[in-house]
Image: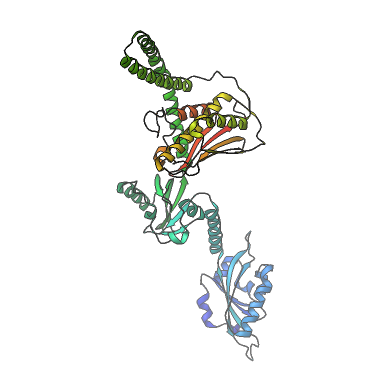
Length: 484
């Protein structure tokens, strides 16, 4: 058989891959030193062995088929298989099978050259890549990968969802596409200096979604380093900070309300007593004087004193702990009564009130008078807004206020929506602050919604506003089923 072994096979002796000369019946004629050393057996031992004995049994028929195909077609065949070695797990290899020599009178069989290339590391890298892709595609955190120039070469679905851009719109683009220019050049220079040095950079950034909305994230940028310790790209991992920012704003707002409440109690005390004295003096002078001019002016003073007194009462109501008794309250009935109170006013006569109340709402423990005060304050504001819109536009369009009640996740949600002039976005964040009002001077104290906000918070609930300027406004009162 050895007459079939070409002298050129000596070149394969120390070839890094495993090399064999086998017959068409898969008998080993020759093997190189590389495989002999790897398996720990001599070449003499391996010669005349059946090649199939080296293969994992699951790949024997597959390899046999490829050998037969190579003989029939005289074309190189390639297949992946596994070798049974002395190690715990089979070695994954890629087999390259080519015809070495056709049958002769001295050796009436085909011989083939088989080269086995170790692909176990490649397979492991494929598995690692598959795992990374699965994690990247399914993580909730937005992730992007860029080349050395900062051009995006990959973004995951979470990044598409957070940014509003499709992947095809982002690939090849610089992250500047999101830039709001909120950060200085020095800020970004420091980031590039850090990651170019092979270090990880972490910072909070504000970008822009495709819709134009702000996109707040904590960004981690890390260099991607190859086996030769060279940087070949960068990946950025974002953590959405929107919820945290909203919580911070709510905390600041709550703290501000608490501070104002404390201040209000002091102001009410310091102003209330002198005001009572002034009111008494005005009434005495009114009774004593007969001068109509003086009586007329004193009446104006008296009205202003009454207005100031109302403001002080509202301040006291907000700042003073409630002493009212908790009792089972029917939310729907409370809404109906509030609407009846407001409907009596002349301003509301041309306004349509729509009720969509969930009949399955169970009574809950609340202070009925206080919750009714909240509903009435919101309804009065809606009526005033609709009246103002009609007066300004001089158009007698349909005006409505829709009240709804629902039960959602252990919370009662009562909403009041009107098709009035709406509230400007910059005013929505200030709508619950004391003395803030969009009404004309003298037509509102700016305390109604502030007081309502305090009442709802005292029941561990939330008072929210949604509005589209020029079209509609909706207030939502969210109350826990069992606040205490």
